[in-house]
Image (cartoon, rainbow, N blue to C red; front, side, top):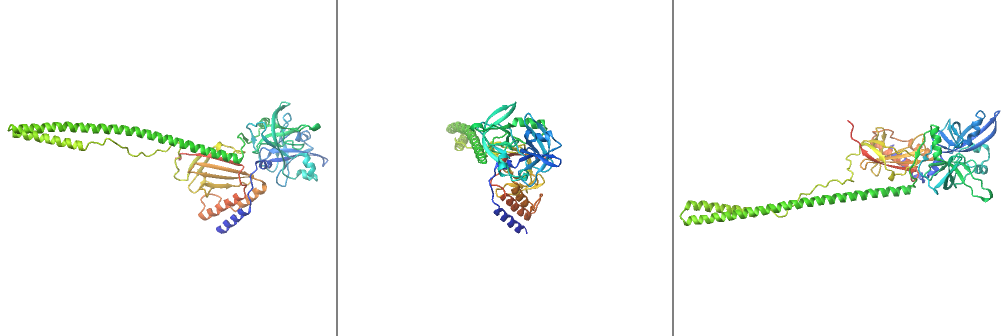
Length: 508
């Protein structure tokens, strides 16, 4: 049964083509149409609409002038939200409004929408921007009935450039060239990574052939409005890079680290050689001194021995046999000792035992077992950060790939432990992987459309492993199922977070 499931999942993976990730398409799923419907005696007497962007799963930012009729006539005007995906529209209520800034916050009383992130970093003149929303002139050309205005459909995108910043009635505005029209009001202006850089609010009149320009409320004004409304939101300040640029920067960072480690290793080896040479010179100096001292002692003893032998001969000539024997024997002994000392004199050259090389400062000590508790810190120069928090991540993994005592990871072909996470609510698939030996944790996020999410969830439904400590057969099927989910994903992620992990001391 396990083998059959594995084959079916592999076939399923082959039949599903992968597409490229698109940040603008991803944030488009956070764009909604905001509608107002005026009722009188049970009949519709008025209808208005604009655009909005989800700042949380249930709360939408739009323009104040889009919802002003619902503010003036709360008993007669209903608010509604039409997501870009799905089959339903949802009622909404007003949460906060600021007519000076022309901003409003409304809440869906049903349903959920993927929230977008706000870009808090610098935006230079000339930067590429994209307007998303529901322009009225497109509606006039395509809508065939009132039902088309409350039927979910993708927002229209229009590309342009950031021109400059202006203050209009004391409100900070971005002037840009992305084409918008009535109906775009309240929709987002986003950067190439899909982060909100402004809320579209107005356009210039194009009389007598004048070129039109658009105005978007700056994120500084948006941030103040949301803060005053007590609304939390996801703010990202990192530079927008394409995935190719992020990959190139990652390779450059790894190359720089490798070069730095090589320089540190070369410096360490040079220092070790210099130390060894100093030690060797000192040892050789000592060896030469010992050799010379030994030879000098041998010479002195030889001379004394020779004198003793001469004295013995002299005593023998005088007939003093006993003295002759003592002097001659002592002299001969001293000469023999002198000869031995000379023969066994030390070598003038010396050597040192080979040192055990110490690891260079940049070398990482290998991890003996693929297990332990880690605290992982983001590496911005190796990451592409578009929508996610970059707080430190604690990771605990055992030798069988059980992470944080609850989630089973599978061993990939590259030796990393990995898990593809497919949530029920969020329209995001995450591939999390950890390499304990390299002490690296990696998170890749795919921001997906409803159809692709449905395929991923359908594949996940056959999951054979839902907790830790699975048997080998189940793990084989689990690994195949993970690859089948991967095959439903685009060719590249929208976001890649790379963390460097430090192993924590064991708890008592």
